[in-house]
Image (tube, rainbow, N blue to C red; front, side, top):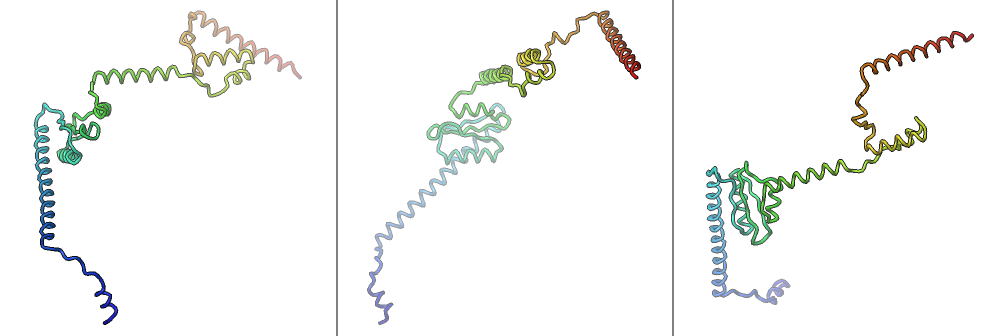
Length: 225
């Protein structure tokens, strides 16, 4: 006898399966297949129900949305799929678990981000209250921008000191920081309160002064050798 034969003879034979065990295994397999078929049929019936509700939503012009009751994830997935096929939008809201549900909207009535966020938090959506909050937020942002401390981009005191002297530079820099914007001129300073006669007189006076200076400079230059 060869070595392989001796090894095979020395090994234990595999356990045999009795007819009773085979019948039990077959029964278990059939029960599993039956449960799977029942589950498939349950999902098929549920999908048909969802399709009917979605169809009614699309046909009724008075309806904007349809809210389904809370359900398990597998059923919510079917609702999302049916809504997408129908060209609608669906959102899951509520906490995970018993309160998680789906709301299907017509495209033209889909919620804004604020409304959707409120629904997901489990809060009631109030459009009027939302508008008031939006206006309040906008007003606060506007006030924040106008009251924000001004930070100059350069040292205005040093800048003016080189041009008009140290003491005058202090006043100029203080005026710039007080007005909060470089180059700001009050409206009152923009108005010329002089009369027409005063304005013409000032112009003529400046013109005569320039002519006098020009004549003086010309006389000085001609007297030099």
